[in-house]
Length: 106
Image (cartoon, rainbow, N blue to C red):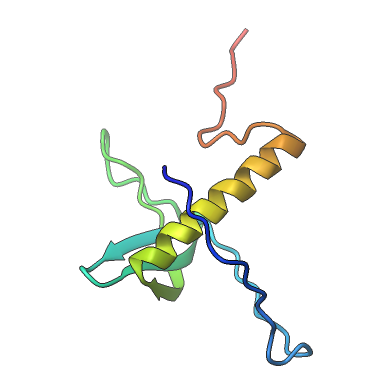
């Protein structure tokens, strides 16, 4: 992935006392058009897993809370910033496993 170099920018909050809502996310649905990329951010209800039948994947209901839409340029810059932050996290705490490690049965 080509590294993007952006001019330094300092973002100053308009209202420093305004509380920013916190949203936990464990489910993302992506979409795109020729002009933009969108992410629906939500929370999966893991306690409500539906098993449709043998050989079919489990279905987990998701409550989507917000849609974030941005230009492809902003999306690429965000992807790079996310990667940098995950790498910093891994340097401090160890590798992040996307899939849980399988437990060995003894």
